[in-house]
Length: 454
Image (cartoon, rainbow, N blue to C red; front, side, top):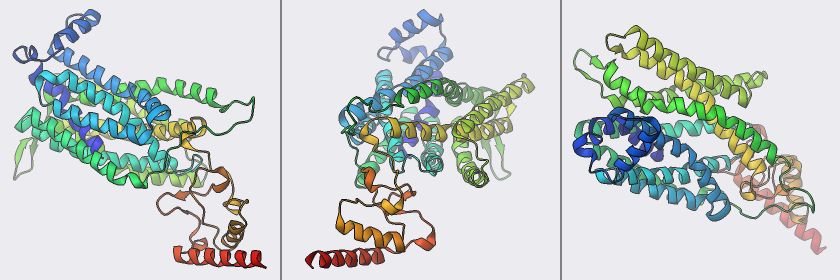
């Protein structure tokens, strides 16, 4: 949540900050490296004014934000692990946000934010996936709930950071984003004991047999998925660029509430998207659940395709707004319709894509994700232990709902697992309280010991 608070708070201000303040000639010459960057961009695009240059920098920033998670994932999987990488990324982002308060460090701050996001973003999402078995049908819905959680931060950040940046000072807005990221880092460190441990050992394989026979096929599928994903997010991220400029210059932002009249700040419109995510996610998940019961729930690829179509429709709405108000400011109702269609498309595309990639990584990646839960509850416990065989028999016959969330395939089951209580989500009639389970285990152990002594 706090990481999204920092990211979306900064994104809501970035283009406006550059266009309305930083890139003005009297300020721009103080920014270290800006002249060199501008010359490089103009060598490709031709002469750039203030607004085109701001959009180019914004495009580079957001593009690298989406590219660097590839390297953050490699760093975590092959060298230092997901948890240290998440912590490193959070620390870099905290430093980057506070550096944004100094004009001359602007480009260096963006570099730290890009590197920090690359380290943080992929690994925090994968850790959510680790809470569920790869074939758990609740994975898509879990990522949707996770998506609501991070959008709590995305909702409040334009209201807090945006208000400070527009009304008090740009630097206060960026500093507040840094404070939010620092709170997020502290929260993550406090919750570390509850996360599953990451393993680095490769699972044993038979001689001459490839470790991941389906890995090439999965990577090919992800490469194909990269094309629509790139186009989707390139269009989606215009909220912080062309849409923000449209709101500032071409939208009627006046508000009359009888007792109060005023103008809505530009950055506040960035809160509409996460607010609609709160509103639309529960009914959408309910619809998917009902469709799943009758076998009509769209597949993962089907959901993502629907998301792409809806995103295209959202920008057709904005095209209609431009055509209908060419000579005057457009009504803010056009933006409400745009955000509504875009949000539904995002819910069909983004959390489902996260779930798909996490599932592929769990099944075909390194041993860090662990083996899938493949055995039934009747073989939850290791057959090598006589004591556990006695306990397993009792639990199987009477409760059926107890199993261990471990990384050993012979100690796993394919019932959906509650990662906190470590109790399977079996039907209510088949569950029992933890004290009763403990008593049954104790009795089974005593019986086994008595049998062995005889």
